[in-house]
Length: 311
Ligand code: RIB
Ligand code: CA
Image (cartoon, rainbow, N blue to C red; front, side):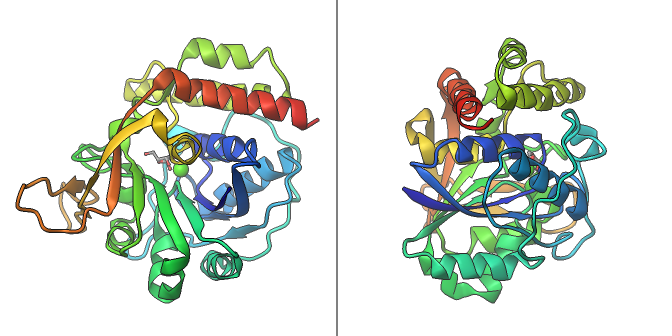
C-alpha cells in the first residue's frame, strides 16, 4: 500500500491519472488531491478536479493551491486542453467540497499525520511542492518519493527545450530537484512513447459510464494533439501513477538532473550531468522507455474496474 497525494492541473491526462489511481485502492491510498494553476487558471483546474471527484462519487479531500508560479505570471495550455481546461465531456454541476484553499498547509498536514511515508504525485507545475519543501522542510523525511510528470532530458514541448510543467515554473522545479528527496521523473523522453491509440480510444465509447467519459476526454485530447504532430495520444501524467503501480513497465536510470532558470531560449530546460567524473547526487530516476501495450492495458483495465464499481 502506498499513501499518495496528487498535485495536479486537470487537464485531460491529469484526469486519467486520477481515475487510474482511484481504480487501485488496494495499492494506492489517495490521501488528498491538490490543484495548481497550469493547463488552465487555478479556478478552472480546481473546478475540473471537483468534477472528476464528484463523477467518481469519491470521498477524497480536495484543496486548491497556488494560482501561478513563484516568479513569473501563469502561462496556460488552452490550445491543448481547451477553454475549460478539460474540454470534451459534459459534467453535472459540481458541488464537490473544497477543504482548503491553502494546498501547502494541507499537504504538510496530511504528510505529518500519515502513519507511513507518503508519495507525492506531481503532475502539474511544481509551485505547491516547492513551497512545501521550503516552508515545511520537516516533511522531507516523511516523503518516500516525488513521482513527477515533467521535463525531458534536453527535450521540450512548450519550447524546443522546455516541457510545460517545468516551463511554467522553472524556479519551483529547481527547488524540488535540489530538495534532496528521491524523485522519479517521467519526462517527455518516456511520456511521448506512452501512447493511447485512436482505435483504443474508439473502443472506450462502447463501454461503461467511466470508460465512455474517458473516451470523451480522449476524443477531444486526441483531436487537439494533431496540432502538435501526434496521431495517437501521449498520456503524460498517467506515467507518474503507472510507475507506482507497475514500475517494471518502465526502464530508466538514476541521474543528477538540473533545471535552467535563467532568461533565454533554454529557460525551463532540464538536463542531466552524464560526465563520468560527475560527483553530484544522482537522486532522480529518469524514465526513458515504457512498454506501451501494457501501459495502455493498465488504463483500459482501470476504467473497466471503475465501470463495474461506480454506477
Ligand atoms: O507537458 C505535459 C504536461 O503539461 C502534463 O502534465 C499536462 O497535463 C500539462 O500539465
Ligand atoms: Ca498535468
